[in-house]
Image: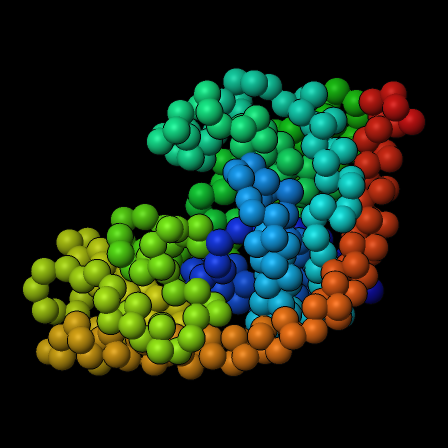
Length: 331
């Protein structure tokens, strides 16, 4: 008898433009593991509402993310792909977990502190403060065993594990306590204009990132303008964060090691490195872009696939939610 497949949950917000960082750090790896596990890959549109959104743009971005999920190779035969807001259990379980979570542990979330540096905590939405609880609900609603996470989400996963254990202690065994799924090829891609910060799809500066749907000539222009370090030697060293970032992107895009790339570009300078990197990115993203744009030409079909995914997800979610409600006396 074959071992039972592990259940995996992950998702991306439909805000901003999905970048090569999202592809190399998450999407590419989801595709690699999809046949081995039972997967729930969500478009977390409720999370996007923690900051103001243009409703028309948000609606377009939801379909865009769905198209990219499919274009990179996620297969509905192996994955349940759906919109978070179409499964009401996410919001309902989040409220139950809000009543188990503690104010102190939410106030220690570093991402909330980071995102309120400019405007201050008093002007932030309550949703931004409590969204780690919604993230916990996303995971626990499917009793996921594994959650692909990057460094910036480890604290939120630990909160999820804490809430699962606390709920189980208070009300009896209910939720699986999930484990982080650290993917070996999960690249951490930094900003092209600032290699000290992670590449963000929500950056206001287009030169900060390469978007998955960028035109090839736009990609070449962005890489050509990417920040470099002093000197001319193409090496990945602590005193060269910009060149190290470009080499890391090159390596993750092509599968070639950084030392191999350093050897190839020895004595050739930053210009040649950027030309080679740009062409490698174009070669990787161009077919994905073409497939995604074709899918976006048929929004009705995208909506049909998302609705079918939501129906499957809802059937699974209703079981965990029903159990949790019953344990709390709401059954």
